Image (cartoon, rainbow, N blue to C red):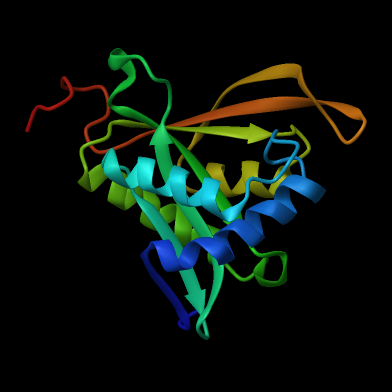
Amino acid sequence: MDDVILRPCGPPDIPAVQAIYARAVREGTASFELDPPDVPEMLRRHAGLIGAGHPYLVAEIGGRIAGYAYAGPYRARPAYRASVENSVYVDPAMQGRGVGRRLLAALIDEAERRGFRQMIAVIGDSDNAASIGLHAALGFGHAGVLRAVGWKHGRWLDTVLMQRALGPGDTIPPGSP
């Protein structure tokens, strides 16, 4: 897929990002949100992540946003500061073309460059074989399953946890060269 351009996500990209996410919220199980956030809310979230030094990327094909990925705080408490949770969403019309793989690989590289040490995937729905397979292919290991923790689309959903070390991982303290 040489026609894919990966680049930082900027505010002008957010309406396209919001459209991709809104469909995922309405139709899918990857996100446990029930109502899609609007563009102003997505702009607020984007600004918060960028302002905190987290990477946020888009994939563009032919001038159209094909998908996006970002890494945000895994948990809010300071001891988690070197760990991030990733999110990857691809426009359904662009799925199966390697967009998600390219986004996640670039996100891993960028998170490592910024000094993060662990990346956590919190995958909605244990039946989400595509996301589980994508993460496994890029070095994430299975860390656990939280059974029936979400109720969406009239059924209970699991959360699959996967984890990948970034850079030196846990071999040295955070902030060490």
